[in-house]
Amino acid sequence: MTPPPPLPPAPLPPAPPERPRLRRAAFLCLCLALGLGLLLLMLRVLAPGGWTLWEGVLLAAWLGTLPWSCLCAGNALVGLALRLRHAEPAARVVPQLLRAAPPPPRAATAIVVCLRNEAMAGVLPPLARLLDGLEAAGAGHRFTLWFLSDTQEPALAAREEAAIAGFARLRAGRPVAVRYRRRAQNTGFKAGNVMDFLDRHGAGHEFFLCLDADSEMSAEAVLRLVAVMEADSRLAIVQQLIVGRPARSAFTRLFQYGMRAGMRSWATGQAWWQLDQGPYWGHNALLRVAPFRAHARLEPLPDGSPILSHDQIEAVRLHAAGWKVRCLPIEAGSLEGNPPTLPDFLIRDRRWGAGNMQYWRLLRLPGLTPMGRWQLAQAILLFLSAPLWLLVLVAAVLNAATGSGAATPPGALAALLLANWAAIHAPKLAGYLELLLRPERAAAYGGRRAVLRGALAETGFTTLLDPVSLASKALFLLALPFAGRTGWQPQNRDALGVRWADAARLLWAPTALGVALMAALLAAGGTAWIWGLPFLGPLVLGIPFAVVTADPGFSRRLRRMGVACTPEEGGARRAAQSATRRRRISTSSK
Image (cartoon, rainbow, N blue to C red; front, side, top):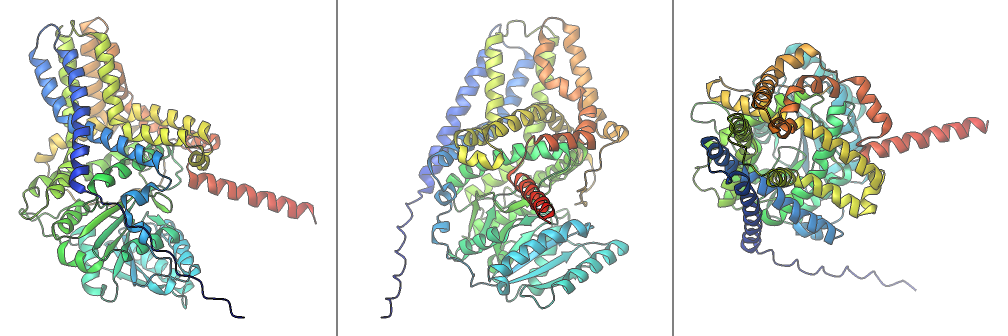
């Protein structure tokens, strides 16, 4: 007797209504409440003894930093609540995930890898693993791999082309075809590179997966993005959460451990209220070809310079055209490389800062949605807060040095400093708290004790990093109007250490600023220098901090100790240990 055919799956219940206006109003009220609490603390600190000129300057600058502090705390609180309450928090903010069909996908997707002066030995292995995974899932025939090169130097271009040709020969006859295209001129930098590809070769592809040279994605993550996109025909971009690849340098290791913890709660909380008008970070994202070509083409600015931070303005234009952009707060299978040293980190921040400051000229573009304008303003605030914090610091030091801070109540000052620090770092604190409260999620990091150890190490690291980073960004932005045009330069992706002379050349200005401000506090006498130490001490120590955190020996010790170990590194370590045990057993049995 033939068994009856299986019943079709039961239809999923409709997703609850999202009510964007209600969510955004609720989030605004939360941020206003947080801001009011911080403001009351600030007034308790400044009001006793009457107001001075420097206290007025300090308050005005501090108020400029308040929106970013409230945004950090608000996103963290909402994100933490969602992540603790729901087993699948991503589905609560991206309902298309519930309607996603299992692979293989129906649509054709181009995997686009943007190159410029890259060492191909680090680029190709992750791509081979991705293609192997897609083919093993029976989906390889729906994908084509495209290398889009902007390499201009002939010798580098020849090595690049030879490496890709060898990669293609090894994969000849397999389902995923490999293609290579190099432009003679890198007009428009990465945005121009991608759009040129879509204009010339985009036909026949419904989606494209945009990857940077240091991107790494798993087949499971890519197929999930495609399924989410196929579940909603009005979805133009699905941006996956991105975490750091296992790193050799201590600087990268500690930085991305905290970034990873913070992005989980930040992205979940932000996705809850931004909904269909989410961000795009330029890579590790799936995009729909037709609307992107129609609406995300970037013209030069009025002075003829290209838009450097292209990703968010591309998303904002898609919002304006009625297309959806969603951020999927799942970190598994989506990685990138981060700068290996403090100097490389600061140089990257300067590039990003120059790009984000261009958004001032785009805020008044006609047709943008209110959320789109806020997205641009938020990107500006990320960097504008640096010179404002520097002004707060200088005004506070001068106020104390002139004897005007004698009436400041120390208890209120301590409460304000702690509350402001907690607000700014709330996303990371929420990420750590999630792992400590959910042992099953902490297990991938080595357990709660390992999470706590990594959190403490990263917090100490960030305490030293933040003042140096803020001062560097502030000084760069203050000089930016007087600088020439800024381009998009290739990045250093290798952990090679930092020489003392190189660190001093980059960090002499923040160091000199820290020494001068600390000298002013010491000359004023009293305990003012103690209050300034957490902010000025890192500036004074910036040069040795850069050298030590890039030191290969120090970095090896951290790795051996397992400090700030990520799930990817832990998984690779366990696999290596298992392979070693198998070899030993095999050898002993002979």
